[in-house]
Length: 635
Image (cartoon, rainbow, N blue to C red; front, side):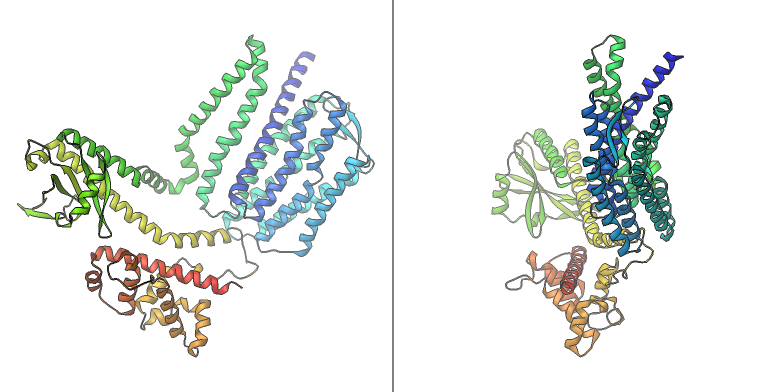
């Protein structure tokens, strides 16, 4: 019976040692995560302060298990009071920050936090310099601990009263939340809020328990307390991660779970290995270093692989209702071609063409802003640059109708064959394929080979896909300001019932701001979208109103004029220069009222390209107005 109790006590002691180390790693990992993602949030900063004090206590626990002398034990036992003394103040600090997010601000609470940290400093000095709270005599029947001093009971009352006050504040913050989601998450925080106190409480309990109490019961209580602390710290971090975060909730949840699996979980498993493998190695008669090293490396590899295998399950847990959309976005991310991807693919195609035709030079060039640029090349690009400098290749960018189909026109210049690269529907030309003329073969015969035709088709498909993707990127750039405004508003409203001051209703903060700018420009010389525009609430319009005898419409028109002129490049106006395109579109379309077809002719661009550039021009006007508005409101 004694042998069984001894074995059980050894297992419990080892488990507590592992758990104390794991909690230290978890607290450190979560503090790093919150600092990285939620530093701008007062709640995030307060939570990190609380985690820091918990780390002091558990670092002391881990070290004390290794000390061999009473003198060293006293030093580390008092070191733990760096955390114990300040945990009550951290509770008040954290709960005050939570209440502030729900628009409940109190100067009394603010001063209470300051006094709490002052009290923590005084308590720490009393512990280090006097025997009033704890004395240096060390009990070591099962774990080193200090003796309680005459005023220890006063500290205990202060500690638990402060923690209780923090819990009341958090429960009040939960009641102030309006949305179901925010109230549920604040409920998690209320339930897990006792974790830092529990992290300190076993130590406080052990300083006053009589030595005759069963060590087995003590270790069991300590083990259960450590398990609860580890779980509740993770729950608290999960809730705090949403405060001040700019990204959507699903992204926060996924990133945090992935971080917990790859960081704290993996680190905790490694701690288990480092502590247990030497003992197992001695039982098996194997070198401890060999067992530890081999098992650690194997575990790290297997855990990473296991997390990747569990990713589909993780997606189902995190995304649930949005699983189909998220899967589509992930697939899109895999398939999108970057500029480097396209260049590499085209270089491979050109190399294959050069090998089949037994030539040294092959290039793909595209027309960008009325000039040719080399997209990819095989055999050095110097020859292609000389060709582009000596000849105007734009006449080669056409196809001819033949038997109801549109076929590329082959052109020969200076020993090179030029072949237009078209869309799959043959209604537009994407660029030019330039190949050195093969010797001993006619051009139609050389390029009519089925294998060569297939390679050319692959190049056309890649160019067309890249062209379509550029349209996607440009569309995303257009809507990104609106997305940012929506997410910013979501960040502000996650836990707010009524803000301490009204949410800024300035039009620049609205997701519809760019659309309002477009509507006002469309009715630039009069119309309901100008006279009733929400842009009339802009501060810069109010300032301009005084210059026009209170005429709102004229003031808004003047502000729009100023924004358009802010986009005018320096120097003499040019209708075809790239740097003048956006300004010319704004001036011709909205101020002078030209039709789109006439503008396209004057600017020498296609109508489809003109509409795309018009969206970019309106986005630039919106950006200019936003900058003007922010400058006008800056003291």
